[in-house]
Length: 245
Image: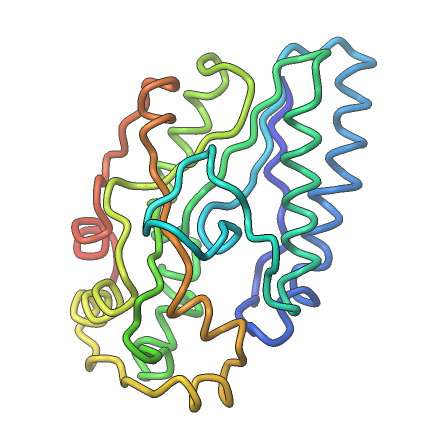
């Protein structure tokens, strides 16, 4: 068994320089994936689990919640292009690997200890300082997963589930306009500011505005069914209150 969870995400958050900040993580998703699979073939590993991501990579059209069968974005924002290409590479490699059982877990937005939405985390800090505004109508749909539930899903995938791709998220995809004020309330911060699209483009760029206004959420039905997994925190509404300072 090989579980490939390597990332280098400390300090990321600049939507204008997204690909630059994810450069090392993208190498983990491409070069290191190939290296680990080569090692797996050599030693006769039976199962391989890799980390992917669920949410903004989906095409920004159709309904608000996507399944594993829905297409990824064919025209991502320029600053996200290399990162999405690395995700495509990882998932494509997993999907075509036949000498072992290969799985990609598409985690939603992590929250809880050690994450950007956790004690000392970047998003929590920005929310406290009212530096994480709602752009436009805040219609972008985000899917969350508590870090504990992400770990539990990974453990479940060690022995369950056919090869393929699984969305690992909670049961409650939500618009930015819904979850961000709730996050501020949970940490006893002032409500987030609301800014128009044009100001959002000036401050966080077109890619950032897309994240806040256009992205789609994710369905966890396949993971619940095939991994026999159910999140302890079925909704961020509970998790934000129970697990954030």
